[in-house]
Length: 155
Image (tube, rainbow, N blue to C red; front, side, top):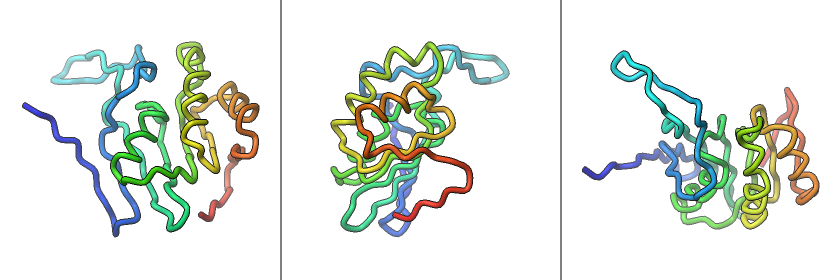
């Protein structure tokens, strides 16, 4: 049976993605994550309930807000473009889940792909990690915004 991936548009400007497909070969989830199913713990490395919010900003492009970004920031950006038929990424904000030894090896590839998307702003949050933030700062210094509690963003 073919699985349907659902998303929800709100007023043609705000989109909740629903499950984000894993389409690249380097964002493979969290190997030590488990979920309870029918009373048993089962391996769930893809954490399929991961979602993002997409705002379509007139004359600017997409603002993509992630939670913990378990699907991978590149998978999330690719899916946002596919859902909206919009190629411009104005801002990426949220968790990129790239902290810790498991994820450090994919930071270079992730930042390579982020550069290809050419976001005007990148705002890494909670679970992104210092190493990816530093790599973004080195390679895309004008795009990086260091987030802090209480900051308001007006797009």
